[in-house]
Length: 123
Image (cartoon, rainbow, N blue to C red):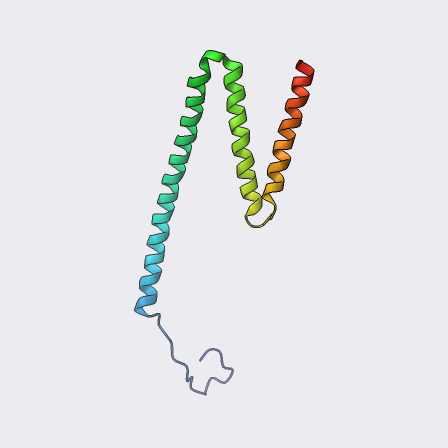
């Protein structure tokens, strides 16, 4: 046995080969991972298509109100989505932030303050 220092002593250890179940599970896991990866790709395609459809719908519904309104509405929706995704990132490892409600309260408070300042200045 190569682990022993005395080469003259016979090795009592036997080489153990993986069982058939282990090999089949490994093959299943590999094929399962590739299926999950392709499903993940499909989910991403559907997500991007849905997002594009949402922004197209916003543009079509608000096109009579002008470009400025359409851009502002799209920016508002994009800011809401990015805030939600940011909170999701904060909740997952490595951050594991436990107070997502606080982030939401701060976000909506800032929106209210900015709107109040805007309408105060605009009249």
